[in-house]
Length: 201
Length: 201
Image (cartoon, rainbow over all chains, first blue to last red; front, side):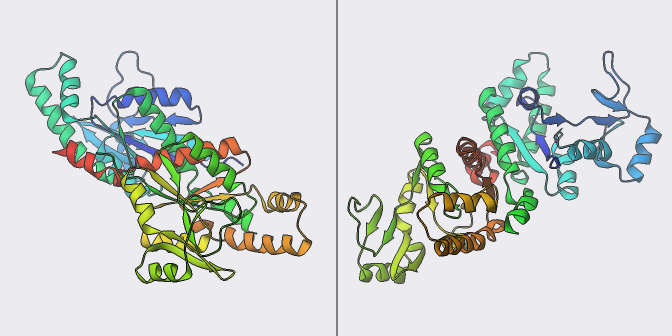
């Protein structure tokens, strides 16, 4: 029997390289998968249903909310986004670790519903570096940059609610840290009660 | 400024390969050191004071108990054995992780005094394998073997009081697991409050 996978919540401000680290981690660890969110927004060119998102209607989404079918959900710019409980649960049951790349508000909803989930925050080495990275894209106005910085600052204040902190000063090191965390969590006694019961018989 | 090291408690029944795993881990991780216990028993040929043990008199040992100078101590076969607080604390202050290879009773004393310590248990893959390993030495009488098995069984019952469980079916894998645990623990948000305070400023 395959043992149940772990739910891993991965958050961090835009500009910390969260996506890059996550993608590289998944490439090296085929027993982990990324959760696909459901959304009511329309698919953009090139997006496929079930890959980037599950594209659902507003009515469907609200029905699922009523049935407590989301691990977390939120409404941004008039569109709903949420993590479908059933899809995540199926993957966990099949022994996959499921990574939720979500923002802090969603993460705190998960914490209430799935206390055994692993909460990982990825942070820039400093605020200065974060500002440089956001400015570095060179595509944003000062207003947008300042707005993003304020958003990032509010997110950073939530680090203490996470279990682990990865400081991303080097992608390779950050991926290794992510792997160490996942491997160590798998060794927690609380996740090995079946073996313990067996060996104590 | 070097950040303070972590106190790591490592236990497991005799015959699980605890010593081998620990030795190999220390060889690969020079930022971790083994704690040296104090004892009132006499040095055996080849043993050096401060290396295998700190050899002290009974009076000295009892004085240190009175001053609350041990992280844990016990009396076996009329001799005291204990972990000197001061020596451990100096190494931690210098940024070293300190590993205590101690039995479960001592570990539980540490848990009360140093709740932030990391508790790692190493177990055989099964009781059958443990018995084989103990018998395999071929040097013990059935009585001694049974006594050791009973002792081991009592120790196994304490696994749930530890944070992590390493099942030693392969030394290389067990050492890697130990490394993953130490690396992940270093990333705990609770061990990075200085950085968090700094980045949130």
